[in-house]
Image 1: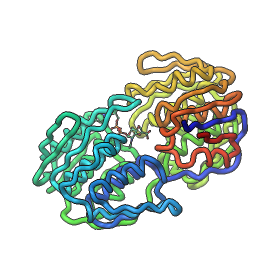
Image 2: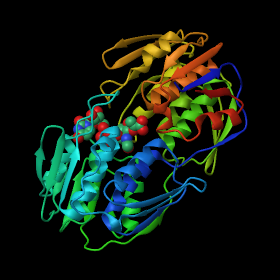
Image 3: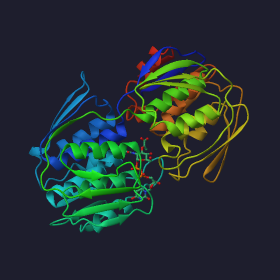
Amino acid sequence: MEKIVVKGGYKLNGEVNISSAKNSVLPIIAASILCGDRCTIDNAPMLEDVFVICDVLKSIGADISIDKEHSKININTGTIISQAEPSSELVRKMRASFLIMGPMLSRFGRVKLSLPGGCNIGSRPIDLHLKGLNALGAKIDLGHGYVEAISKKLIGNKIYLDFPSVGATENIMMAAVLAEGETIIENSAEEPEIEDLADFLNGIGAKIEGAGTGTIKIKGVKDLNGTLHRPIYDRIEAGTYMVAAAITGSKIKINGIDEEHLKPIVAKLTECGVLMEIEGNSVWVDGRNEIKPLDIKTMPYPGFPTDMQPQMMGLLCIAEGTSLITETVFENRFMHISEMKRMGANIKIDGRSAVIEGVKRLTGSEVKATDLRAGAAMILCGLSAEGITEISDIYHVDRGYVQIEEKLRKLGAEIKRVY
Ligand code: EPU
């Protein structure tokens, strides 16, 4: 079984380059279905999740070539067969596959998909996606293990989301691109990845305004074309390396950031004593001060991202005092706590909150990556711990971090993968 082995206690130094955002690229690849033309994604992150969504599109006839050396993906969705049903095995593999629902329905008037399974961070229903598509005129049939949506013609409508779900906002926005008339999504998710998706969609000829705010307006169009798109930087990958500097008491430079997107992460790290100096698209992170305890509540953007919660918890395990983390976005995103406790962390769970009593130092141990961000957090804990940490189930981490051990090794970490 593949494992990552980290020998803790080494200071980091030097620079690290951030890749493009996985959570931008997945919906963008799905969105390319809409145009039935050729699209190129430049500087695409070469990640397992990206390969899976490409395979989903290939399973319905898209012609895709991935140039790993130049991080480029060429997609021709003109070859998709209109009534094709995507491979259920692939769709079940990754929740983000569900993002092809809106584009398929909008372009072909029908789509049948396997239901995405539950996952380690919660049940993650799709009711808001379906409610939105239904409001645009789709007839939804929820069967055993699948969902089918049919509509001769989608018609624009006003949709209020009960919760600003990222995926539901994306699916509805994509479905509305070819709908007749205007769609307004209220209480839409405001994540930077939504804005990036809208930029891509406008690039293929859509008419979208307000993405990145709580109200998105989409004027339906009839024709779309191909485009070339370069996605935004991955703010969660950048945040993870910021914590790497802090947890090892080091100073490093992170290249490939957007200051605006990192505000909630920078604010919290600054509060716990980490010094930051932003220079254009780079940031110097100086984590050589003592780490002060913090209270964090995860929230939809621009609140503190749930995708940084496990990594911050790792850092607070060695803070000088008691911290409180409340997870409000997912109901079960504390699986990493039992792994951190194996390393000597002092954490108590009280409902959706975790109370973290800082300890002087963590101790290397055998732990598991229980999901993607939890896996990253365990690597971070391993970097600061005394002794050797072995992290198994590392495939979770490969879903979302480009060459994590290479990047950390270049910064001076003692980290390797064993098979
Ligand atoms: N929800 C519903 N009904 C729905 C949709 C969502 O109740 O129809 C609930 C979920 O169960 C969850 C909350 O709303 O409790 C937030 O879910 P959301 O739909 O916003 O998340 P997502 O689209 O499934 C994306 C990211 C996640 C990230 C969340 C929140 C992608 C591919 N995934 O998921 O990324 O945690 O937004 O920011 O964009 C990760 O990268 O590690 C990751 C899990």
